[in-house]
Image 1 (cartoon, rainbow, N blue to C red):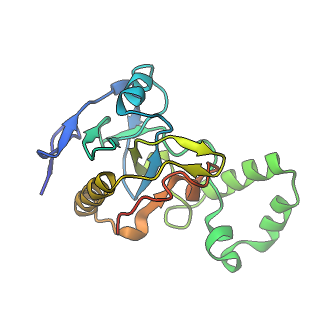
Image 2: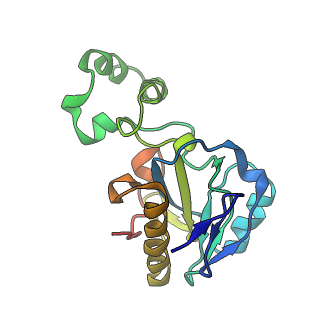
Length: 200
């Protein structure tokens, strides 16, 4: 089993260190979930080039050949989820929503609605809402979008590495498969992103 060093780096022969401290934004005080992404870049190097500029990024990147890179400390927060999260109660069980508040929000214009839903959701604690940057680890898989609904298919090597990495994170943070999400489940993204990711 892997270990975690004092800098928040996962130590194992399968993990290559490529830490970009300029994608780290403060302390990640708790890990309740994992969010799986695709890079919308053709190669790992394209993503690394973007990380050098800072801003958005994730904790791990898995190349098409299955190589795993750790790109940020798991003790640090990364901007990987997005600015607006979806309503978990609307997606999973509408009966669990506060119907009076929800009715008001759903009557708003689309732009105002998604902002209001985001604010409403962020007042909840996980798991009553989807994960956010401050309580989740991000894993990127190299792969480009094809059109507005589709991404490249994730390779068998990527899925094997994803399964191994997720298993390690389960052990370190007492997580289960119910705590792993594809990016479009959580926020407003291309629905095909990570659609072929398999971690179970």
